[in-house]
Length: 115
Figure 1 (spheres, rainbow, N blue to C red):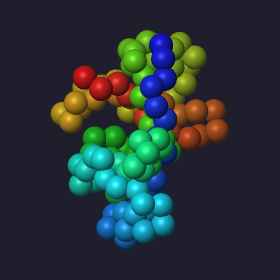
Figure 2: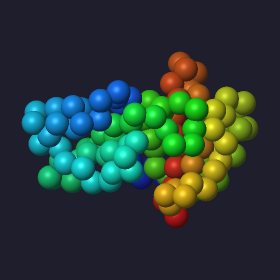
Figure 3: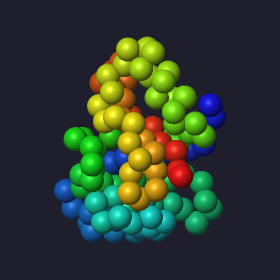
């Protein structure tokens, strides 16, 4: 299994103000907008941050999202370690297969692969 990217997920009650802040201070622009989640990136194409008001199908906003090339292998590894699965392995309507797992420090991680 290969990690393809890691994106911090920041909970925000004010999507517009948060987007404006990252645009004004760091010149980050939206590269994905689902309404409840907006992913911002810089013009150089490196580094992203996602802003979330909530999660559409999961019970919490994760601390970060990690995209992998084999989400089924990652899920099997998480289950084998006995880690808490916060959101089960799910094919989401926006084109990702993902699950949420809690790390030993209590952070919830969204592990995903694009269809």
